[in-house]
Length: 325
Image (cartoon, rainbow, N blue to C red):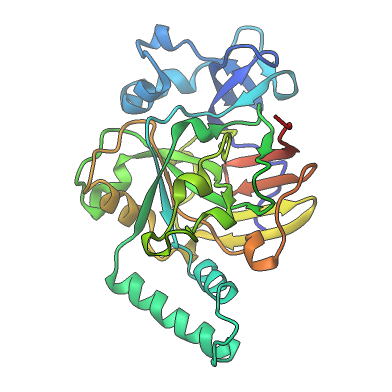
């Protein structure tokens, strides 16, 4: 892979705790150290306002250095680097992932061979990319957590799955923007692991109603995010990110964002046709192939996920069991 799990971004926005349980503070990652960021001194009321006014404040923020040299990463606890008011998620947006999931759900009496089924699904995906539209659903902001929280696996299922994704951070209010101008509304990028309870995604009691994303994706902490928010100018083009997730040291997802059916400008433009996207909002771009559903492997207490995306650093998540109530 063209990245190493231990490589840090050269520059990033963070939120950090000086001790477990302490209130999160905004900061800057620079020179491998965390420097507290004085939002009030910048005239910004929040990180969302900082993202919105980035053009005016960027130089001051980049120059931020603590007089004492800042804090070592080992001496702080990193929270989610964003506080979104809206979380938009993209479904079925990686060609290979969709093909693999469709094959995993293929009826046992399907007369087609696996090769025939794969070829047919691939043709459908290519037609959708050429003539269709992205598929969005809504996540809840309270699911967005950082490395300061372990992933509690709800006891009502044993089919919790991982989906490491590239997420775009919106920089300014975006409403009905053109595809050509859409990328200018993206402040930057972060990593999100969109955890999914697979057996709750489809309603067996009401099959005609389809998917139930509230139950399937919105349990506590089901969107581990960060630990870094990296400006768009510091990261590669959105079609050149390498994405990898390891589970207990074994690589599960290993893909690049050039497998997207709809690229980031198309996603931002399409999503903004319905409602305004706000500064600091997250737009998840979809999951590459390599999820547990296709492998018959699901998360269990004690599992550790390590996810990396080019130039965005590494996210580490530990799974624990839900306490009996």
